[in-house]
Image (cartoon, rainbow, N blue to C red; front, side):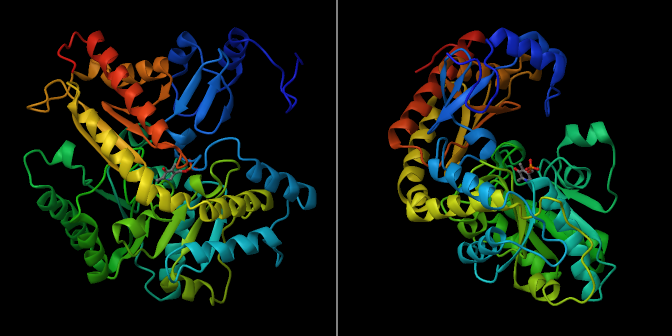
Length: 466
Ligand SMILES: *Cc1c(COP(=O)(O)O)cnc(C)c1O
């Protein structure tokens, strides 16, 4: 066996990788003391919907990497697009009155797949940068239309909009706010439409209306003339796959129109097919003004993000005099744009998104719902190819386990041991598998999840598994 991989990376055994990792590599969102004790899991290769670790385990990737590998692993067309573009033009910028074919063509194609009116795009390298861009772009818009006092952004608690200073402030993740303190001072938060967690005993639609009306209250409190935009994920991802009641979005839309507040749909997870439409906004009937995106646009093969700009803002920014003083070295990176083009072509030509809508999505929904019969599960919910189950101590009262038991973490570890990646958000278990998954693989996911729930239950001394 060669002592290097095809990419020129040495081949080590698991122990050596773990030691090197612990010595040198600071990971995102990680407790390094804990990781050092456990030893990192090293993923060496992947194909289709499976990843393979350095111990040779084959693991069904129920999270599409990190919500991004929509087309699955091992797509030669995406690899070829990147390689060919790198040979032709590996890099050039768009700052100084220049551009290159892949960025221009991708901008045109995004306009084709996005909802009516979204025919302009600003590129970034990530979703966080996309949301930072949203803040500056919205400010610029209100300046240009001579309402410069509209500077306040309203977001939601437990939202995730990224990890840069502005995006993390825009997000509503308590641990991030607690660690970093108040960072950007023009951002307000309202509560989320999390029916299972916050709406106990309430009719879901009544709860949805109540949570939406928190926006109107916050706008009134801030002074409508000061509010620039409301931002939200169509379905909250990292917060625990929170699917709002049907009444929620129409009321949010109505409130934004009433107060002339811009509506930003963070499509970083929901975009590019996750909910069975090109964008989550289409599935949920939202008509936003801006749509930040990233993740699925390249199926994660290369980093790319951006902001799709609707008619209202696009008409002003596209004709503005004076410069929008914002941009990144890698805005519209040619290789990333070429991969995005190949990705969108495949999503289109192979009917992947229609399949999520009409076939594998409904199948997933039906099978995933059976997990609600498990003694540990208080609710199983899904939409498109994203779902969550809520782990509870008591199925009738829906009471949670004591936090110190770390039940979600136990279940996640049990899933790994069963050959399934499922993520834990507290005691909510979440999945977002590749969109190319077969019905049979859906069955495998649900079976492995059930077995992992059994193992979790017996580790807690809970009996009565069906
Ligand atoms: C992941 C995510 C982001 C941040 O994207 P990065 O590429 O990690 O910066 C923003 N918004 C949502 C909804 C996300 O899920």
